Image (cartoon, rainbow, N blue to C red; front, side, top):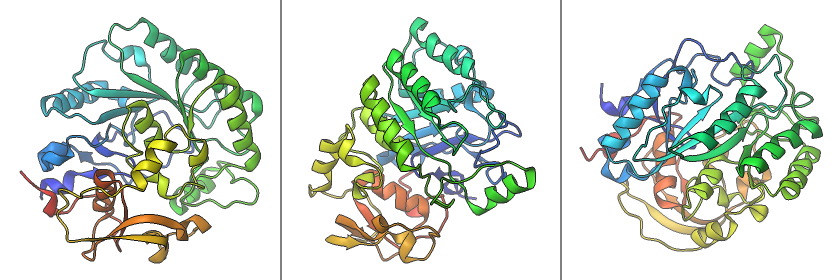
Length: 361
């Protein structure tokens, strides 16, 4: 097998690491179907020198990175050795006190995940551990970037005003941004919930699918609390990472769907708008392409009938679009967006690996 078979490019990160047989047992977890029991250990620059600045997540598969801390630290040192310069992200509900207080020559980011609710049966984390993790960052000799991942916010479970406010109070106390979303429910995981008697429901008027919607009321409450406690909020993790790490734009190009992700109220708005409207040279893409401006471009997933729950925004993409005729993988599609900042028009296949054409080594 090629080392490209051991690459995994998720929606927001190039992922390295391995899965475990067990985790914290969160009932809503999207990985409960066990599809990711693999190892993806090929580092970005082992594929292509131009991947040195892309975002990397470590041990984001089933099994929290702090439940396999030796491997997590090992992968961080490997990234150091390769002189990786892009953001390196660890998302955890584990005990951060176990993480070594040492210097990493990396742009390292620790995202503390919380369900918000004070220890719900559906969530394997605990509120006290979350608070303890945040408290511990004040006493560490070596500090990194930090944020809060408040996901998933579930209808009637962890979405009361009091629960939301508790998370914002903590974020304000530690001067941290919050990334948040509703619950994603695809067909496979819904079947597991039904089989196990897990009562998770979409918000009234919505259906489960690829998107993670919240009701207008919850969105309004979150925006209100953001202003009250002066906490920056982000619908998308890549937007948060781009802001915290002072990148020139959201590397995942969500600015092509400004209404869907509330770009109007985002701290990255000016940077992203400037990037979207600016023509830039396209370098180091190993595929033939054309670049054209489109007013009403339709998302590739919708045009290929692969999205069961399209929205109006899916057919309202305006800006410069890279058109590539050669069939890409989903991994290629995402990588091109990250590297160029442009939307991509391609009938890609649902495969998170990378094409052999990317190899420079």
